[in-house]
Amino acid sequence: MPDIKNHLKTPAVTVPVLAAAVMLILRLCGKFVIGNMGENENPLLAISILQLIVFVLPCIFYYLLKGRRLETDPFFYVVRPKHIIFVLVSALVLLCGTLLIKYGQYVLFDEMYSTDELVDSVVNNTAAYSGSGIIIAYVIIPAVAEELFYRGIVLSEYRLYGSANAVIVSALCFAFMHFSFDNFVLYLFAGLILGMVAVVTRSLLASVILHVLSNLLSLYGSDSFLRITIQKSGEIFMGFLLVVLFALSIILLLSRLDQVYSDYAEKPPVSGLPANSKDNLLKVFFSPAFLALIAVFVALTAFM
Image 1 (cartoon, helix red, strand yellow):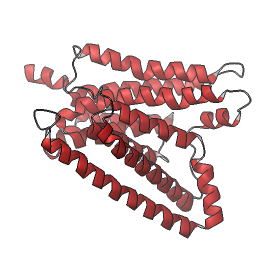
Image 2 (tube, one colour; image 1 turned 90 degrees about the horizontal axis):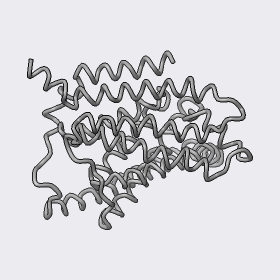
Image 3 (cartoon, helix red, strand yellow; image 1 turned 120 degrees about the vertical axis):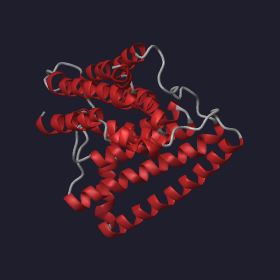
Image 4 (cartoon, helix red, strand yellow; image 1 turned 90 degrees about the vertical axis):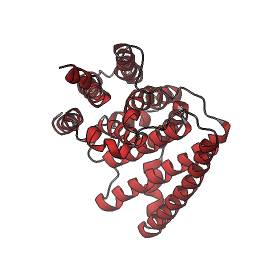
C-alpha cells in the first residue's frame, strides 16, 4: 500500500492529471465563455483573465499541494549574456521551422490552418480593439502564463525522468492544449524548441521571450507573408529556400549548443547529472496517466 501511495504522488501520475484538468477547463472556457460572448463584451479582457485563471492558478495550487517543492527546481533565472546568441539562433530555428511547416500545409492541403478564429476576427477588426490590447491579450499574457505552466511545472517535474523526456512531455502537453489535429505538428515543434531553450539556458525567461516572438509571428503575417511569397516566387523555389534556411539554422543551433555544453563541462551548473531519459521511456510515455491524457486530448478535440 505505501508503494502505491508513493507512486500516485510521482510526476508520472500527478502531472498528467493536472494537465488533463487544465485541458478540460480550458476547453470548457473556450466553448461556453469565450464562444458565447456578446458583441458589447470585450474579448481581450476576458481572454486575459481566463488565461491567468486557467494556467497560473493551477500552477499555484499544484505547487502548494506538493508542499511548496517540485521534483526539480524551476529555471527562475535571467538569461546569461553568453546564452544570448544561442537564444537568437533558437529564434531563427523556430521562425524557419514554423514557416516550413506552414509551407507544407499549404502545398499538401492547399491551405494554412488558422490557429484561432477569434484571434483572426479581433486582429482584423483593428478599429474596435487597440494594438496594445491585442499584444497584451494574445502575445504577452499567453507567453508568460503558458511558460509558467508548461516549462515551469510540467518540465520541472518531468526532469526527474531525464531532460529529454521533460522537453518532449512539456511539448506534447503544449500541443494537446491547443486542441488542433491540423496544427498539432506546428505546436509540437514550437513546444520542443521552447523546452530545449529552457533546459539549455536554464532560464524560463528565455523560453518566454521566444514564445512572445512565436505569438507575434502567428498573429501578424506568417500566413499572409508565406502565401504572397509562394505566389510570387513559386512553390518549388520557396520550398527549396525554406529547407535550406531551416538546415542552416539547425547547423548554427548545433554549433551554439556544443559551445554551451562545453562551457558547462568546465563549470557545471548543477552538482549532479540528470537522470537518463532512455531508462525512463516506459515510465513516462506508457504510464496509464499519460495514456489517459492522450485520450482526453483526442476526446476533447474531436467531440467538443
